[in-house]
Length: 169
Image (cartoon, rainbow, N blue to C red; front, side):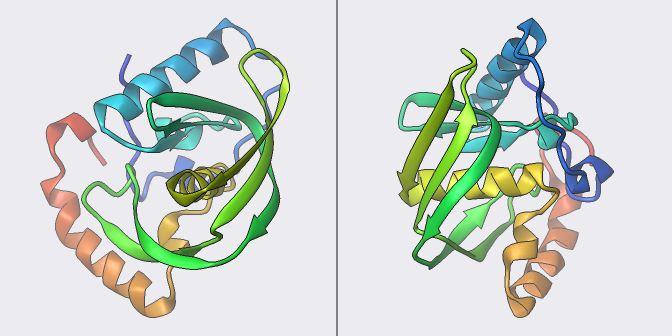
């Protein structure tokens, strides 16, 4: 089932997500819905906060494979690059954001196993973006002062033009 995405301004986006203690049918179903949602929106990732849940889980798409990260923790960040980034909670808005070029993250899989993922490129960027969401940090917070001001100005014009499939703000 496609989930409704919470837009910038919704208080849940600023909350720190709580660790998941048990992987049950609800969590597995929610992860499945998250994967369906990013497929619908042709997105790279989705954090639980964006779907209104303060649970420490996100999904990311790497090529045609979905990755589910439960209780993720960044182990290391290497390098720096500035690249264009967007967010489902800011439909139509893009900005230049600085991120590490390589990330190593540990998490729990849907099967309850500890996993460690090393990523570069778009997957590294998506992982950092989604973990930020779980910590109540939005991509505009990572922009430099001038870029953030520009992004918020653009967002003011965009938020009244959001297509209906994105839901209400």
